[in-house]
Length: 535
Image (cartoon, rainbow, N blue to C red; front, side, top):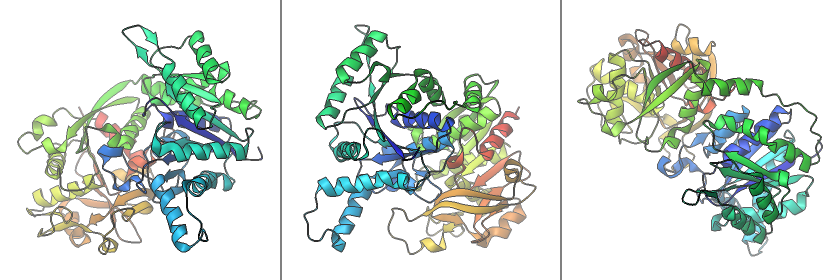
């Protein structure tokens, strides 16, 4: 193909229909045909990025190799494609407006009145085409966040309208995802919401080429023809997306529905390349028909919203599949854990993960969870703050430093075993100022980490301000908690382990960000295996 093809995915009727999963599934099918594909997400909120958002507001904040704090959908993109994303793959309205206002302040517009059209839409179009200009992608799939009809989404829809004209129908295509609800009282599937959603798009000058209909029940040919007729699309361009037991089944469902075939036909691209999905199908089979099950506790303070730990949840699915095991996650709110009830609340678990987070709320419960895992020889994985809680617990209960704490929780602690990073001490802004992105780590041999990674040199993604205080390095080492992973450049402790324990690993980084379907993260694979071996 000579020119990069642009595919836009919009949504209507309701939010959370799965635009990210449909985008990822189409991308996977195109990739399986041998094409280079990337996906970007345009988010309509005014935050510059989701880094300062409470997880209850927006779910997990996903971090890329280059240190961008992004929407959790980028995690789906990476897990499906196995290709790293970057800052260019996530654009927010806040970032768009910030860029345009910065240009205005510099005088770039030469005194002109700055308006949504053309200045905001021009900046949106520039960001959309940025990935295509890199020249390495055959397809750029752009997911427009929100729902058609939202005031916030209007500049994006207008930009798509303009781009469709500029790129031409041979180089661009629009997929619209909507809902066909089932009314139980009348026993009917209703297409009117889809019709209204497409009508709204048309009012904005955008005609979709393909409709993907999310449904709980099979769509009859009559319903498909009706939708095609009322929405000005071809019959074969009405695609059913029925509910499935795992999101990883969606690419197979979309292949069966012929979504990739329809897209390639509309873009006049020959479809003689064979689709290679054998490893993917084998993975889905293991997820759907596991030979074993194991129950692992996820201790965190946002457990009411599992999306707050989305990458961790998916990491367990990947690690479980390698072990032919379904991981049943038991969500445990750390605020509800006390010394008095921890044994009862964590009883029967084959593994315990203490999740990342910020602030002092729920910390004592996390520390109690660590203590339970350590004293009862239960396989343990601590991530970021979870690793720091493991250090605090060990200092208090093994080293005897009863007042040990993180400076984040107590500025006056006599034993600051977790301290603010040196380069963070002058930082006052909250957004995008943490240690972010991928950094190297050297792993000691004869450690759980080395046995998992099978190498001494790794790179992992970070998102934190506080670190292990090296002033206490020898105290911990002498008492049996061994730093087994170190950043050679900064001497930052990245991994701690207790060799006398069955499997006890705390990591300062976020392994979940790098776990994908076809390349599961070795720590999750090893942790699940250790949990399976508990009698």
